[in-house]
Length: 518
Image (cartoon, rainbow, N blue to C red; front, side, top):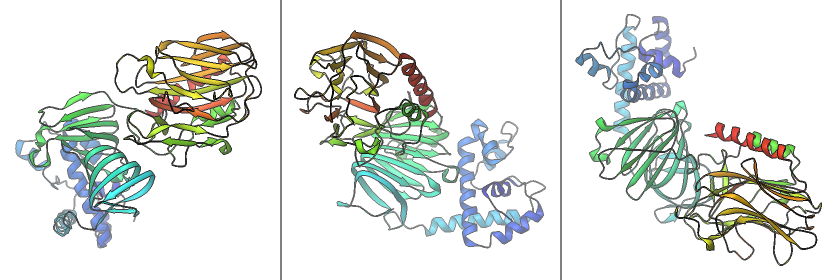
């Protein structure tokens, strides 16, 4: 007989037959199976407590509690730990099994090792230039025992019990308490929780967050915790651990976010931050990448989260990520699921460099990319902050550049075969913390600038100067000045001009991709 979670749910809900009970009794003789049953029972308790007001309990537990008709006594009993309503079909043996599970849970609680032991809580799936510190020394093991950790640099992907995936961005300070609980003292993390991991808990100085099968992110800094839910449901209980008032708990669904400030009595609703958190290290195959490839690009830089640098397609044109002494890693969430190159914006990213790019020798070209501006403040753009986005112009060599002008407008410049410089400028300043698609084309007659699929500027030009393998810089200049402050993603380079129809189609594909990745 196959015993899965659905069958255990029916046992706990009292809807199994007597013959099934006999089989279940035999299955439960295995201590591992008994532990599995106990954990599932404990999960039911958590779900009942969290979901009873939204009738989600019936869907999650297959129960049919009518709270409006139950007496006060019945209502309290229904939501007490491991209390289940009897039904005619529930055999006495099942009640015995539930009792055994209760005793087993109590035994596990008594036998749990005290905080600070060497029990493994999580395994390291991957790290990107990560430096994890435990008790003052670098921690390089594949598993994390209970304890206190500091992620001083880079990114860390951990797997907790039930397949819970947690992504931590430096700088971060956290404790691993068990395989289903972590305390985040400061920093950012994102978690993806499958059904088997329901009940995974993140505690912060200002709140406790219990997950019920979802994807969420948490940001803790300066006496404030933010919780952002991208999918599913979480329960947020504000207050310090010893002063937490469960009656003030709230349930957050997908696309909801709250801020909890130390000392505040109420949670504050805030906008969902879809671009702030790294929620996955993978750069999955996407329709936008396929669309760009179908246009026969020379090279494509997806800007994935990789510690080996700027990976390209084809790989022979790969480059390096330039780093400095900033606070956060040189990677951030990209325009789609995956990563982007983060330059400035309080990060260690100082740009990217490709020393051996493909030559541009047809007299024509196109540049496609996405940019995301993250100014230090939202003050009006300051002239001396002119930023370089992409360029290969240096010492009279090269033939193109894309940057912001003194007014914060996008400006594209090319050098012709006669050495003449031609520029076009966009018609609106960049909006902070918002992605914009940019396409620059030159066909030997017109230099064109497109923003979000629309032609915004054009200027007469002659053929592009031939460039061999001049170095390309992203987010900086050869002199390491005029550094970009934000993100750069999905960079494509062509030795032909894209048509207006192709540009519009690319933008439509991007919009569809963005909608799917939120």
